[in-house]
Length: 315
Image (cartoon, rainbow, N blue to C red; front, top):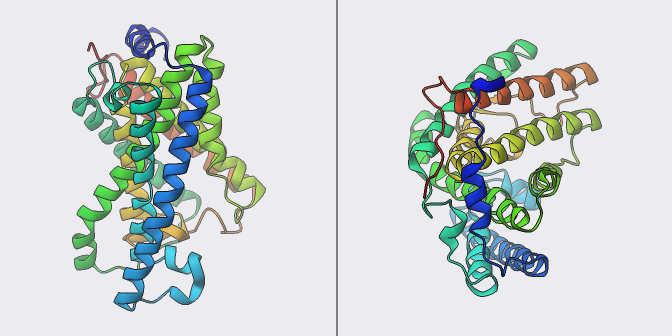
């Protein structure tokens, strides 16, 4: 990509320096504990409410226990809604531990960049189509999902809103709270960039997937998460990362699902990545497709001549 890629760290320098002197390592750890606790409490409360609604509707899937419930439409919506705890915990941590407004995590302007959000969304939507073509060439086992067109259209708005809640909360935590605070205390990107990427990737480890597919998944997710950090570095704002993450997840939730646990609203279902008996060569190809797709996304968002090039948040 060379000099044609815009990676001026000036905006990020302002973003990391905007963190107050109260952003010490002990306070960061305390803040993380608060966020995780709020996330856990919200998860328990939302899942309990979701199961009550599920039972009241008399929907199928309850006989499969928690896994069966989470694979139902109500269960998917419930799982997405549980991420509200991250927003709540981040507000508490910023307000009472760091004594800063939550909006300080958004960017230098203390607003989420809507323009870069849209650019990130469009770029990943395009590259997701490209990667699906390659995945179809690798394995054409794609079938029509169980949801009808009318229920799918009715589900578009609530699924999109809850997916936005999920993805924005993860960006707020992993590319906002963690990156900003760690960069305030440590100058090395091995700490403030690589460490959050590794944590984010490892949290997506699937016990039901083969070792080869888990490695492929970690590479794909890790490279994508790395790009999201680069977008924050280039812009000093989490808007582009939020848009990119939302497009990535919506594609899987609503169009072509590669996960059995989140296919209730997908129009099409592909061979599941977590338990599809993939071979080592196939896993390698899937990881390579993910990495190439992320590289194309980076070009669309960072190349100086791209119409989707993101902009620095001047504040």
